[in-house]
Length: 113
Image 1 (cartoon, one colour):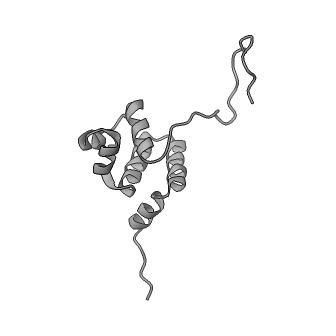
Image 2 (cartoon, one colour):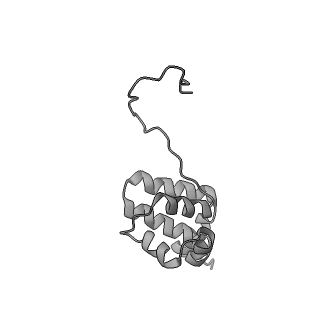
């Protein structure tokens, strides 16, 4: 009989892959639920060696990481950037789907590509 891995073990293995982790985090962000996004960040941290390793990589304390990534956490941009960087990810800004462009271009400003 073939042994099966638990869902948690499977997800830890998949989240160790930076491309999968990026897609997973993007899906959580697209859902628009802050608690879900923070849970996704916690799961990625666990898959990449745990909070202790993340603390060493970011320069944040484990306690600060647990607070920041709790369901009621509210990470600062600097903390979020450090956490993402330690996971091999980065924050990016992209146009919203169907977004309306507002305002006029300044003289000499480059046209959007």
